[in-house]
Amino acid sequence: MEFSVTATDAPRIRAGCLVAGAFEGRDPTPAYRSLDAASDGRLGAIVRKAGFRAGAGKHLRVHALDGVAADSVLVVGCGPKGAMTPTRYHKIARAAAQAIAATGARSAAWSLGDVEVDGRDLEWKSRVAVECLNEAAYRFDAMRGEADDDRVPPPGRASIAVARAYRNEAAAGVATGRAIAAGVSLARDLGNLPGNICTPTYLAGEAKALAGRHPSVRFKALDEARMKRLGMGSLLSVARGSRQPPRLIVLEYRGAPRSHAPIVLVGKGVTFDSGGISIKPSATMDEMKFDMCGAASVIGAMEACATLGLPLNVVALAPACENLPDGNASKPGDIVTTMAGRTVEVLNTDAEGRLILCDALTYAERYKPDVVIDVATLTGACVIALGAHASGLFSNHQPLADALLTAGEHAGDRAWQMPLWDEYAEQLKSNFADVANIGGREAGAVTAASFLAKFASGQRWAHLDVAGTAWRSGKEKGATGRPVGLLCQYLLDRTRAADRTPAPAA
Image (cartoon, rainbow, N blue to C red; front, side, top):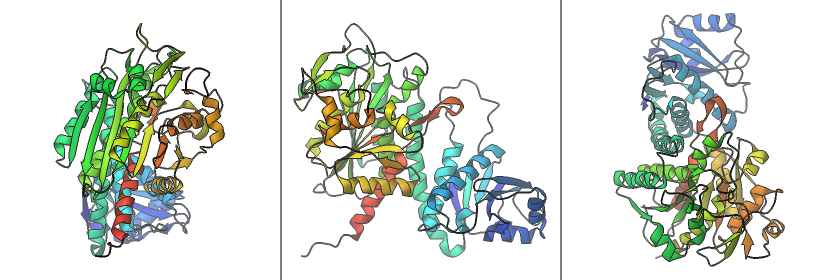
């Protein structure tokens, strides 16, 4: 979708569908008021006759209003007037974007920037508009041989309508939103591809293509021989059952001097997870193509980071492999040696994500990072704990955890902090190795994070378990692109924090 900013008054905007807000009690926003006046009260009369109550996210489409240039007006409910929280605004924006995408209009105009939101400016609201419109317009058609005639095509372009004095502010928000939306769409595309296409080699190829688009990004991929020399026995043990060779994908973005320690993002890239010898039930196993969404999200975040040209150094690591049953596959009870030299008793081969991430976390140490953030569709236990609304956040450094929680709230891509107490690590004790890869049924998301924490000691580290948020099941099955928004907001916040840091004395 193409995005632009317009300073034209709402009644004069030419578009297939123009969005304007209204609060409960028929309390209009400025854009709605101007549209009603231009139509000699016709808009308000139709809304009243329809009994529209303007609940948050509810909408009513009105066609062909005299005095209004747009083909139709989509009145979107903003709920009760008063404190508009960012969370409620995100809900309204998503509902409006989805309604627009369903209209079949070829173009859209967005006039919800006149809704006041607590603690948020027009730049933020313009960015949210772009991200929500892009999310609603997203279609995954890469594997279709025929057009789906039942799907309504989304608008091809959208304009963000603002007062002339705020045009630059809105344009800044549109630019940021466009970059993040591109990262989200890339992550969704990679996640939605089937496992027979999106193999570790394919994923590495897409990362290489990203580097080719951005001169600020360098790419390399470690093959099996290189990983053997480095002693990544844990990662390689997961890949043993597959004919697809594993890869450790490395993307290095440099936007700051070399002396600045990088932020390292690590994403789990199991391109298909059958569970291995501890095989999963067949129902919904097709969704295990999404087990590489952690890798997709860090690649997507790098796309946005490079597009925005952020003055940071960022490294993305994506250990990629398949987890399949085979005569050469790892077995329950096997003991493997990690790159860190620690031995792991593999009690369940379906707890494989932590086995590849631990070696990637050790590899991350060579960058002497400022912080390390790993992202993984790690545990079903996190889905049970938090559902599809929040990603699970674990960290050994509270300031980093606080920064990620704040970023998630700002981006509308929320996380919830979970405990990481020493008592949980007791469940990982093994009679035969330094540590076991599972800790029993209780607190499965926490013990998984506790396992990773053993390989992040000495680092300021956080872990995001996105098993409940990285994709949707059922009728709307597909990758969501989360937590690209959260990661991008964290990087933007780091940029702004650096801008506020006083220069050292000469």
